[in-house]
Image 1 (cartoon, rainbow, N blue to C red):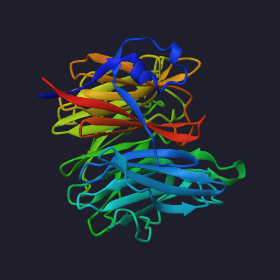
Image 2 (image 1 turned 90 degrees about the vertical axis):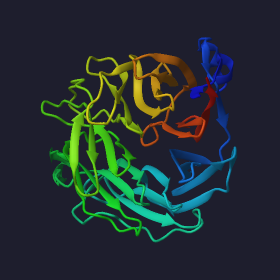
Image 3 (image 1 turned 90 degrees about the horizontal axis):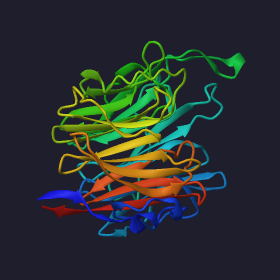
Length: 408
């Protein structure tokens, strides 16, 4: 038996579109939207899962100057009671994360902008954990040394098999600012840094994953056994900004590998990072590039993460923000934002390791939020794939589910 996505006619999935009459009719994935427990103005969505495989959706609710980090667990087709992590008057620079650890603990991470700092992008990352499902939380900690300079909106996390937690961030400790010119940069060398917290919530040494990376593109981290893989947009000589993958562990062993030589030369950060998913020995990476002036979403598979196959082009009219999840049959479900001009579309498709792209489906058509809610969230739980985005018109997070079923 293989897992495959159910197909149905376009009408089912087009219920999520704002302008349904403009979408083409074709065979599509079965997509439905879920009602969320979030209230009021909400954004900055993130999807993860508990240790026993339940969906976690976290978000930020805003009322006046108050920002509240909340989350809820989706279990047996119903939302468990919504929980609160923190409330703050500070700006949350990156979507907060609530992550299940292997011993049942919940870990929360959030990033606050540093007020009145000479660097307008300065932030701090805080971590806390809960043993009672999020009803109470430990006092927050900053799991890095005093030399760290967190660059806002750039963190990724991954749970480890021994109840540990890996944290990756973009660091600007080697960036020099000129106070007389509104913090304009004299030199710019952003690093990709990491640390691992053990089950006793003690942070290990700081590890440099790459000493020169693209500053504003998000990273994505996943784990296979004790080895972690982080994908990111590199910063190479000549302002080349292509995607790399670094394999690393808590002992400091680091091995970086280019995913593909797109040779995108751009004198600035496109703020459009990659994603990675690991399953068994298979790895898949999805990313955006525009080296020839056209927005392209590409996917590449790898048998072990040390060498990637030639990329498969999924879309050549893309806005980007791509995600990929490995399915049980070895293919990947890819989500991204497509340029439908003048609007955008949230698209999904199934991509095989052999290079075939099947079942392109429009999940949503309309506008998308700007920073820091512009990335899509994606998570696979059992036979369902969940996709989250922020709707700037309705000023709320939305969540769709793509159904899957067993098929010969």
